[in-house]
Image (tube, rainbow, N blue to C red):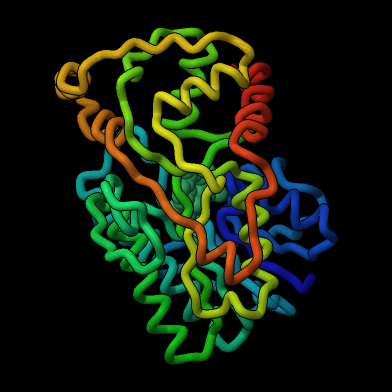
Amino acid sequence: MDRILVTGATGFVGRHLCRELVRRSAPVVAAVRASSPTDCLPSQVVRHVVGEIGPDTPWDAKCFEQVDTVVHLAARVHVLKERAADPAAEFFKTNVAGTERLARAAAGRVRRLVYVSSLHAMRTISSEVLTEKSVCQPDSSYGQSKLDAEQRLKAIARETGLELVIVRPPPVYGPGGVGNLLSLLRWVRRGWPLPLGGVQNQRSLVYVDNLVDALIRVITAPNAADDVFLVSDGENVSISELVRRAAAAFQQPARLLPAPASLMRLAGRISGKRSSVERMLGSLAVDISHLRQTLAWSPVFSLDESLRKTALWLEHNP
Ligand SMILES: NC(=O)c1ccc[n+]([C@@H]2O[C@H](COP(=O)([O-])OP(=O)(O)OC[C@H]3O[C@@H](n4cnc5c(N)ncnc54)[C@H](OP(=O)(O)O)[C@@H]3O)[C@@H](O)[C@H]2O)c1
């Protein structure tokens, strides 16, 4: 494989991607901040300190020397407690202006840019199973910033001939993961009774190593250029089914209570977690036929295998 520049290499997805690229003997350069925890990266990964990703990142030609493909993962994401006075402006600065700045610096120097967007660029709740053809109606500042970045990248790709591939993952889970999905798995592990027994929604998720495998496919496949791909573990489940399957992965019984949705909504409002509760109750599922058919890709690990691997990690990282 040719040389790959990875931004966000020290994040959850980035660490798994760099490890797998090194395992497959690809030369990897990580564009990091001075403060990034680079100890988590394999020693073979070349570190290149570029500082903050934003509208003024000083990308220099050296970053792109012999680089064939850039995988852009760095983003303002997983903001658990928002402290910014203007969150939309902060999302814009890193996710939109930072992405545009990188693409302008990379165009003419590299062949391809793989942009890891998010399913939230489409929406956070949807009664329809989404495909790449579904209309994007982001309903969060984060999702809007991801969609805006996609649109700017498309314009730059048209202007410059840079090959662009956009991947929109649903929530990602696995060893080292963060966010609501990992919290849910921790609650299941602790055997907490969860009031989700009656929830009949449809959700997609993706195990981090399935996502990494799909990213490596879009890095290398010639026919991935100038396309958008949704990705998942290939199986959509309700949240109650997910709890049952996660409990099985921990080899313990699922403790599900059939609480009415109205009661959970009330609890969400009282606890200030309204949008988290809405997302847990709502559906957000994808159809990955386009990825399967265009790139002959299918998930390496089944949902149950992926949950078992995550459960094993959680046993040691409660
Ligand atoms: N995880 C998910 O569930 C999920 C779902 C859909 C899409 N995605 C997308 O996947 C990508 C990776 O997500 P992740 O879960 O790996 O996130 P993560 O663990 O929070 O990692 C974010 C990475 O971006 C870097 N970063 C953030 N802001 C930066 C800035 N201003 N300048 C330079 N570097 C910055 C961080 O660097 P430091 O190490 O220095 O902090 C870190 O390496 C993101 O683009 C995200 O939108 C993730």
